[in-house]
Length: 426
Image (cartoon, rainbow, N blue to C red; front, side, top):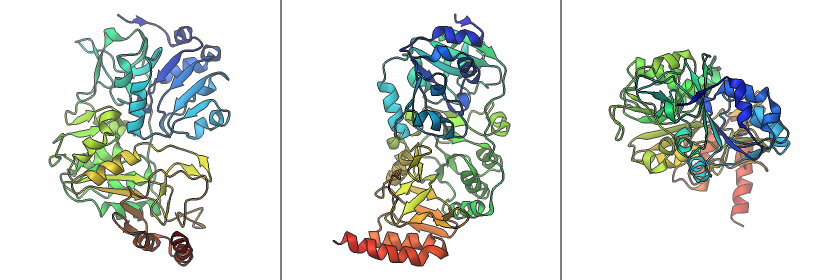
């Protein structure tokens, strides 16, 4: 049986040189992290590992102590100071690569996770967020679980034995929320453009944020859509409730929605309770390229920051500054490319800075990450239309991308492409 302790007991379990896994997404054990933040000396020499999700996970374990370190896979705003100070070890990996990396690590000294209260059979549920916990759980030397009364036990989420936990901190706190907010007109227009590319029976993968929300809001009149991806959101719940998303035509996991986490507000958190058509799976399944490729009519939908005229896309740096990570983008893009009638869509607004900067650029600038290589790209969608680049020549790509750029920049882009094309020819 685990030992039930108060959260402030956790710092006593840490020692210099230890490795500590931190669950992320909506499964973040917030009370455990707060206890560590309140006892900074406990993190001296401790190496934290976790895939902290931008917009949701705002606690920086590397900031607990000047000698604490963090290995992670995104560099969001909350990690910038530690990243600049050299305390964050940023690994630019796809989600499939993160899974392989985590499996390759020696057993963690501690794993900090969040679970539901145990049921009558003595089993706890990972609930709303599977994350990378199943890859860590069996091998970790010590499991410290925040048992949150508000974390639901879900039929399709992995269960872990209560007796396998070493320490338990009981709590009753709200789950981490990420509301979408209002949709600007440009975002709504892009959402409509993307929605036009999705038909009845397609299986979709979608991210979080305003643009994915706008896309989903345009799919209410579709039928038999499926879901396989990283998350379910408030907007996914709406699609199911209006009869648009059922999964009945999926070539695998037929009739089931597959995701890694529920991310949103109480709308989706309440909606998932009791559903047996929703499967929560770890990233080595949700982001497994061969699995994705086996799904007929799979449509991957992601947003990026800029695309150059050859089709290279940057989703994670701005003016050379790392502001995010690759995430699952390329896993889904490549899976979609291999799937029968698969498609991938990269969406972005045509301009930034109130229309003064084009986000369709002649070349990605120095310091920009190539988050999606040109060999993988398929559709690029802006508020001005959709450009299909798959199997197109460099000249055909440039022409198609200029056509969906903001009209104010098209002539300049065409002139710049003429010079770039000359350079290509030597």
